[in-house]
Length: 136
Image 1 (cartoon, rainbow, N blue to C red):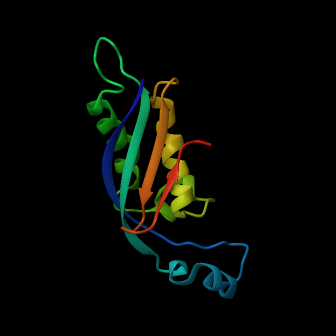
Image 2: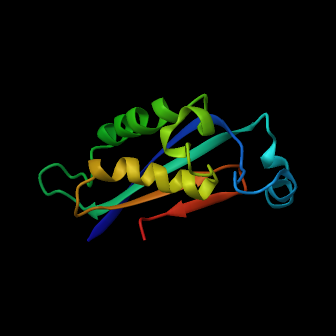
């Protein structure tokens, strides 16, 4: 029997969507207001889920305190109140779309999750726009 445990977190961050190989007109046509040269921000909501078997001695799939601390240390401390394009190394050469942010978060957390457990990242950029990444 597998069980999914989840932890919700949030961070506020600014970004600009653009492709430096394109001119301003094409960037504006593709990314619209998100291409603002002065950046724009979001209040991101994050749900991190770990799926696995319940440990017979602890009753946990994963200790939620450990998951909370992991998200805080690896994600919130790194992304919160930052300009993703300028302040976060992973986005120096990667467009910080919601899709790419979710993949980066998954990659940052995966080394800390037991190999036999599955990891899922759901990132809400707005209350109605969100992405899900499971590593596949």
